[in-house]
Length: 439
Image 1 (cartoon, rainbow, N blue to C red):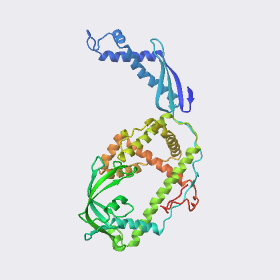
Image 2 (spheres, helix red, strand yellow):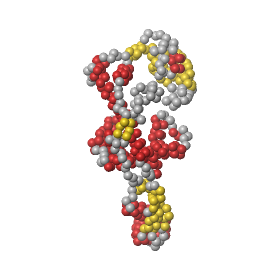
Image 3 (tube, rainbow, N blue to C red):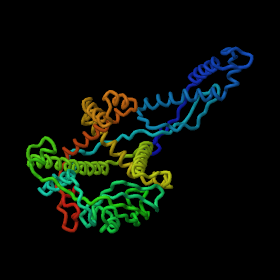
Image 4 (cartoon, helix red, strand yellow):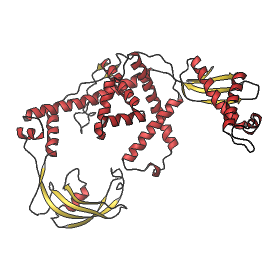
């Protein structure tokens, strides 16, 4: 055996004449039993005629039977963990001679784990201010708001206008909505809508053009100028419920407003802890990848590139885009993914080795809980979901995901955590005073 480079190996193998002749006889007999030749009953054609007539098929069948078998045996003998399909070349197959061939292939990397306990990361426990709870409470209050009709009058900033809206030019697929409610002058309402509806009263009809930004989230409208006809149907005012114990009781199993605030506080803390820990785990994993240097099989990297590209395609489809119409250079897309894919593969191999050393794995109970969760999401019986996942081979992936998450949690628990330096005033994000800096 010869090591070509990194995870690439090669073998030159020779299959004994006796084995070749034995397999050849088996293949010839098999073909003889099935073949129909003029002048002979099925299965009774002379062997010499079968060998002559089907020489090419016999050769191919013998190679396909013996080469994989002897390659696997040689790989097992040398304790090689082969990944992907070997590249078979230089096949020499002649009567009365051994069958010889060369195989180039990749093996899983064998590497030593460095220190993975006590990795230093920057991490700060999240903090929650009263203003954070008040903001979340206002969001809930806003969701429970009611909108009351006012006496007909011209629309002014702060009013909620109920309009019937339809496109009359500028877009191929008609845009129409019978009861669209817009807040006049609000930052979340496109200014052009506010400008053209301000001053209109119920039953008034306005026609106007709206130019959508190029990055507008609805791709069929992005960058287009659309002419709309809008009919004002009503003027409404927003009525917010009072923040008191009754408000808390109406939301669920809460007796007081203070009890609701405590539940909100715990929920925000859980969300921020999850985000902060996820960021710290990514930081930790990046450090482990940087500290471990070993070759990777191209097979693994190519497979990861396929996964990354497929995820990108799903993201495009979710945005309403047709990838076929984007005229992307997929070769360049794949090349751009290579560095990220290599790091992903290395991270996965490192985590696998750590989980094996620390005997971390998914329990049946943990897998069952995940299956039950999926069943609830898909609104079907657990047994049906389990059977479907089993058929798709997804149960093993679920167990692997659980093992990975448990391994990351193990690494986080054993990491050496240092508080992140406080951001300077000009470094803070003015739009989000609660941003957690994790390094």
